Image (cartoon, rainbow, N blue to C red; front, side, top):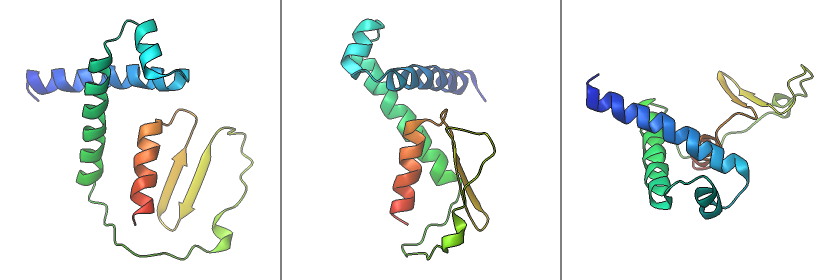
Length: 118
């Protein structure tokens, strides 16, 4: 990996943390940006870059998606009492999805969008 790609990767990670902090605050983006001295245009620029990178990762993962409905047996969803409050585990065959309180809302939104179009 060359220096330019390393810098881009570093910036994506840093802005991902910044955007996550803003979203976790519950504040409006403009208010959060003012309070934290973050340029609003920079926020949205990096927000777009992070979304594009996430979509790229999903595309590269070679997940085959066919536009059809799948039947879900009722016994798939079982209550789990393992002390992991604030988490959601969904298992269907070999596919497992785990959502925790630390899951990025943007990643969750993208996964749900992909699943809803499946």
